[in-house]
Image 1 (tube, rainbow, N blue to C red):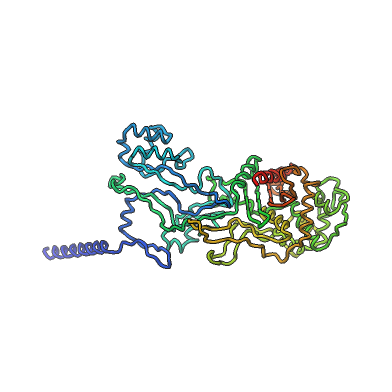
Image 2: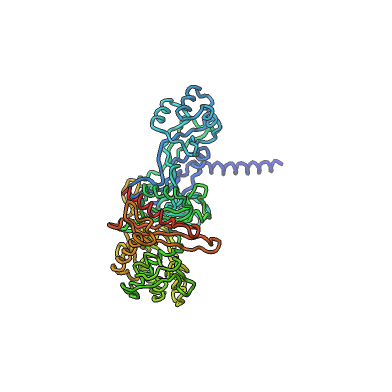
Length: 601
């Protein structure tokens, strides 16, 4: 019995000795939570910091993510303002009634509302407005609150990434938490870098997605406070602001967008009750995007991966173009010399084969090519198409930029942008024929009037007009011109790119002729209803018949430029799923937007 007691004592003493050694080791072990390698911070577990973190609570005041500005430096996606944070302290249960009433009055709340808010706090929280966002304080409110010298609250400079007046824009996109996807795409960053975790918010569409690595930043900024054993704020320590000390972050993305124009166009589309469609406005001098609108509108409750219909940017989605595609057909006819300037055509309303007929009952009679373009005569364009090969139509479409993706991109990484980059990552390619070797006259004729296999995006349609205005020279459409450090210095310039994927450019004389034809459309053709306005404009209308469950509806187009005397802007408008036989709503909206642009410029 005595021997057993001795052995138990030895075992107990040994265990206690090992625990004591372990505690001594932990007390003298390094406390550094990070180490650096190749200029990056790497994770290192620190038990003591972890113990403190159990009692330390934090309130995020800035997500640390980069933000977007327009071409004039106006903020698109973020706003910084003063707000008020309250902490869970016993002082709120003992506060002087008069002081509390004064605070409530300053904040525009009743004492009962404010009392209910502060007395149930378990963690620090912002006082919110009716939109469930932190309240915005005026300078006078800040001064009045500070004069009360109250404990348990703090005036905070808060950055709201998507403020309440911000209208979600498809080209910007959105961010969200997708842990599984983030872990898959950013596994190396999560394993190595301190500011990444599987719960980091990442861009899921738009520029938020394509520029995500630049926008991520160095992590959020927090206000921290420490709790005592009763989970009350620990007196004497106060709050601390924890943020990255790197003066170069977060980055600023400088877009080519004119925010004032963008917002005016968005409001105009809503006034015209456009439910589904797109608008693209381009600078004719370099192809830069000045406005890009997609409908249906993004709404906060819909911002989730998988809600493809709402998240889709219709300006970058390829649709059947209808008669705006006759620009490609007439360009091919002129380029490949299958039509003479003085040739006359006769339209009696029926083509006589392939089930093709003219939109005008009884036809247009005798016409020149110029008149046929202004009248958008299907019979004449089917006639031209049968003189051409599928490959000739395809090559002309490429030369006009309605096949390949036309958004700005670089295929190889170049410092300081070290990897391939496509700004408009959701952009779809255009289609001319599913089979380029087809010799089927019906397929070629129907394609010549923008039906059958033909698809293009509103961005490509607007860029085709830019290509014509630049006498055949193509541009890639920029929507970002520069990426800046937080201090305003440039991290990267994104220069204007000429299109380089087409085998040839159309001749300047061909472009000049088509531009003249587009003027005739508005002066004496299908676009006469929009001839009068603040600018003289030119363009081409199109109507694409829908099938399947959308039978009985059309997609309506109008593309063009203005002012005709000295062109500044190219514009494409798509209004989707309109009742067959209804007036071309896209044409009316084209006129309205051009007037908006003319007023501002």
